[in-house]
Image (cartoon, rainbow, N blue to C red; front, side, top):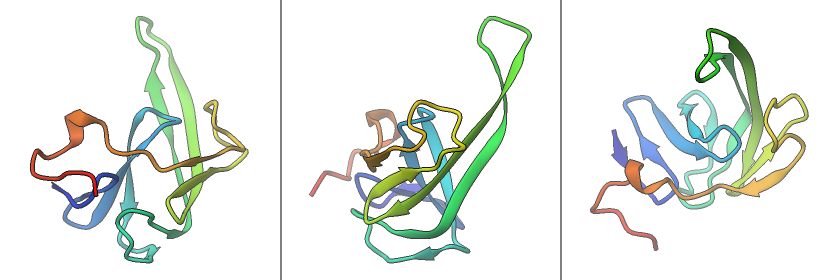
Length: 107
């Protein structure tokens, strides 16, 4: 996997970006329509990531949903998100330093 812009990494069959709502990386499958803009990407249709995760320090798990549309470099989160950014729009953030390749710099 390699970094292709300050905001995206490229895997074998998908792009990846940082989600500020989940504080995690999300994949963007190649089957979606992509405008080709690595700095202000648009992917359609929407993405819905959901699953379970363990609560730190307990034996309990919780379900999560992250559902959004990425348009012109803006994450438009849907109302069914289980994080604090539900119903909000935020700019797609740069990847955190630990996910960046040393050879890629911001434009």
